[in-house]
Length: 115
Image 1 (cartoon, rainbow, N blue to C red):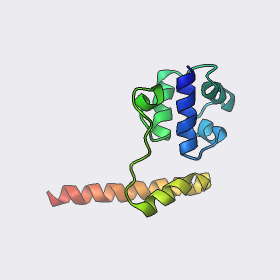
Image 2: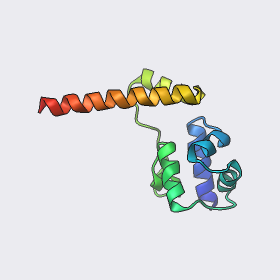
Image 3: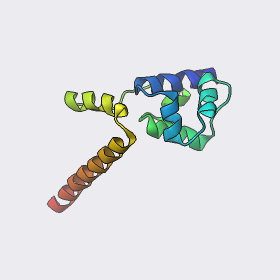
Image 4: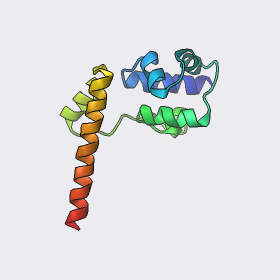
């Protein structure tokens, strides 16, 4: 349990996220999340999958089957902006998500049309 707790904390801190913010994104009580990070209890598998998604890591990394990894952002400016995204308000984060979704979909459509 302690290894999972340590990896969970390291993954959260690597994303510069507070326990409160992560618990909100996971829709769990912050006391429940705190118990996971202290190693007092373990989350269910579906919660581990959601944690991995939110922290942009793998379940394997969280449970110790592979070393933790940083998100693969090759453009230095994008990486710099990525590290600041959690400082945005929820409303601004949602606007950013909508914008990024539309850009990705446009790119995918362009690739499909080129075939």
